[in-house]
Length: 263
Image (tube, rainbow, N blue to C red; front, side, top):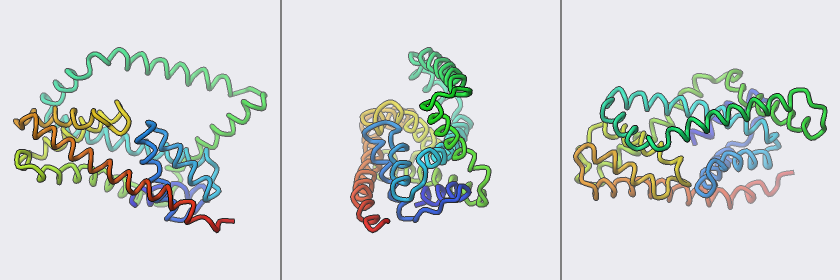
């Protein structure tokens, strides 16, 4: 719900006021699609709101990119907090887990930068009709991204962004009471586990198989045995996944029904 409100703040400066129910269901469908195809949820979300609210896809997608920028800033803030609280513990864990992927990450970033530069040079002055369509798409995308600087409700946007991520951390915190072995975990352990779990989500679709293992490996650093630590990770992952499947599935079914009388 909070994500839907936040999205509304970005769409309004572009001149669009979609129905709030469509915002919510598009967000939930996006979560559902992300379980099967990584990051395709953003495309599905923009497609849904474009179809049912007549918002150009590129502009809708641009606002979602703006949201992701805000989310990245929040995630980096939480990571910084985790390092501040547990610098030695977290840095040694991350370097131990990711050394083998460091070179691949560097090469990937370099390759991406070169690709973006060449793409920009290609479309900048081209008169080819197909390239001009790409230009129009990119311009709409940029308009969506910069909508974050035009919106009237900046403080409300910031509030919802902080609220969303606070709820993520709180959900992680509440799960610790599900097991006696994790009941006394300090808040620093919750932050570290949250960060490590969040980073693991990029490795597989929806964190399947990786999220519980990575969370467990972080929790064991605080003296929790492997089995209860792994159980903690699986409880956390299962709760999130069931919620996404149920509400995302309902939204997928209800979207066309809710909009069946759309002109």
